[in-house]
View 1 (spheres, rainbow, N blue to C red):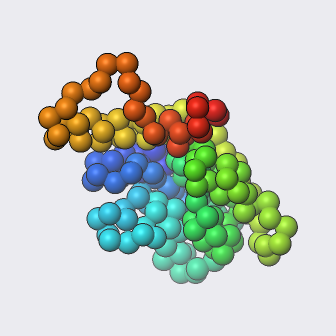
View 2 (cartoon, rainbow, N blue to C red):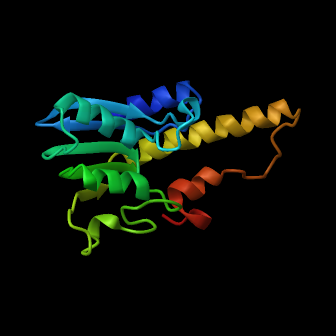
Length: 173
């Protein structure tokens, strides 16, 4: 997960939402990815998809049996579907995503009996570190937007929609 966090930092450095992913086979990182939909003008360029594409190229196969993907934020429906099509053995995520998470927060595609392949999902690994990175990114982005408008921070007002992203509404885990 630490390698995925390093990839997430790369996304932040480029102005993208800091989500990072790595694909591991037999204990070795074979591919990495970070969010890049803005720079790439590509709505599918989530960290997981970027890492899956790189892993498929590295192995010369669109199927990735025996591989695990580590990602800093709970995967969305698109990414979860791609992981199952790739036949990943397991996905490990850091922070939950109560708005779009497809590994239990909103829906759980990984436990859907109707689907023909079942990737194991494990969440909460370094969740605090992963959530802190996201919170920091959005706090910096809000501060920059206020500064650009010539506004200062408003005392006593909490303006942190990322807490909803990583904790759920009203601070619920």
